[in-house]
Each structure stands twice: as structure tokens, then as C-alpha cells.
Length: 336
Figure 1 (cartoon, rainbow, N blue to C red):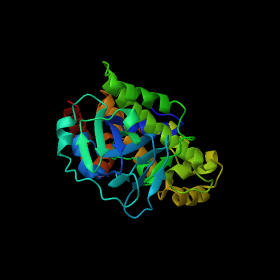
Figure 2: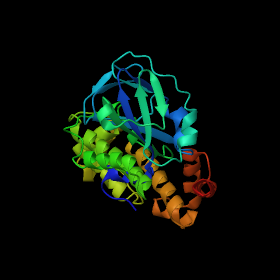
Figure 3: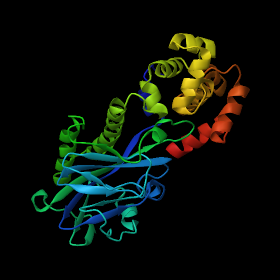
């Protein structure tokens, strides 16, 4: 059901889904406002709990800014993600007033062939229209990734508001696939939309693991916990066997710490005691089983470490607001 690779476990269990994809051509002075994920999500990915936007600068440079953070300059080949779904401005220079856009065109364009062309030029915003690459000063590829936040997603809070990967740090496979996306815009082919959806998922997963690899040794948060030898070991053990009747004594022994030292260190990194983290992860595993299998609630409860269906149902309702059977029916209805 799970593995000893907690990052992969979470990426699988929170249901990453790629979505709408834009090919944006800009020239002269330009500035674009992107609404927050809360506003944008229902238009681009209806039903998604959380939406993350990213931009890859294929040609030219630009700036990305969110309130409360200094503007960030992006060079050709750089990738920027907004894991928390902040409203932001992408522009040719800091401080430029964005072109007015009420977003209404998104509803009409949601089912159009991907990538959807957009042009910014001379103070104008032209959705559905593209520029030849040689006429554009800047070309961006913009995508969306949706994921679940409930019952338990420790990853999103562990990521920064702006996650930038410089061109030299972007996975070597990303640029060729993105270039193929540009080719799909110039000459659409069957299956291109499905391909682009998968690209968004892979880009997010790769950016996340590269951010993890680059974290300093003493970084806090859930990703920092994965990097810590003892706490990361304890998290890996719980992910590998969520149904095991773990005790603090056994976790501490296998992680190489006393139970009190593990508790203190675990809380310092994640903000949660180990046993509370285990409860959250068990509920997340149970939710995945309810969604993806035909197992009854009692069997799911046993697989994720609960002695009784009643105990699992109480914990599940505390985490999601719904009993397991009701939650499963609603998930099935939403998928259909």
C-alpha cells in the first residue's frame, strides 16, 4: 500500500492531476495578473481542493511577484511554482500595472485544445491568439497542478510561496518535453492534451524533490524532517507499515533515539508528536483505500492499524467531517 519513500507516498496519495496549459507570447512592455488558486481553481480545474500554477520561461526573461515578497527575476529556462496558490503578477519589469482580465474567457477555453495560446503586446491581452516565436520577446509555458489537501497533505505547507528552479537545476528532461508542448501548439496531434496533463504532474514532482535535495541540513518543516536521519527514519517506518501497532519505544529504538528525544525532535521539525502524525497518515492511507479499492470499511480499518471499524470511523470523521462510507460515496459521485 505504501513504501519507505514518504515523499512518493504523499505525492501518490494526494492525487496530483495536471490541468489547463497555456502557451503565452509577449512583446514590448507587458504585465499579467493571475488570480489566487481559490478564485482560479473552479474555472480551470473544477472540483479540485487545491490548485498550483507554474511558469517556465522558454524565451526571454521576466519577473514574478506576490504580495509580501520581493519580486523575483526569472531568466530563460527558469521554472517558478506557486505551491500555496497565491495571486501573483508576471511582467516584463517590476511594478507594471497588469492588463485587466476578469477571467471569464477561461470558462469558454477550458475544454479547448491544449496548449491554449495567449498574447500580451502593447498593453493588450489577446486570449486564443498566439505570436510566432520569432516575434515574441518572451515566451512562457504555464500549467496547473491540482491536489487534495484532506485528509492529510503535509507537503504543501512545507513548500515556499515561490519555488524557483534555475535553468541549470531544472531536470534535463523538462525542457525537451516543454519544447514538444510548443510543437503541439504549432501542430496539434491526437493525445496531446493527455500528454500535457502528465507533464504538469511530473514537473511538480521533480521540482519538489529538487527543492528537497537543496534544503540546508537544519531546515525545518516536513521536508526538513525527511532530511533528518532519525526523524526521517521514523517517518519512513510509519509510511512503510502504517498498520503496524507502533509504540514510541519501538519507533525510538529503530530510529536510534530514546522515546523522549524522538518526541522532542519530531515535534521540532513537524509540529506534531509522532503518534499524532501516525494517526493522520493512517487516515490518509484509509482514504486512498476507500477511493481506489472495493474493500469494506472494516477491512480498510484493519489494514491501516485500527482494531475496530468504529474507532476508524470516529477518527476518519474527525479528519474529514464525514463517516468513511459517506465520504466514499461523495468521492465516487464527484469522479463520475
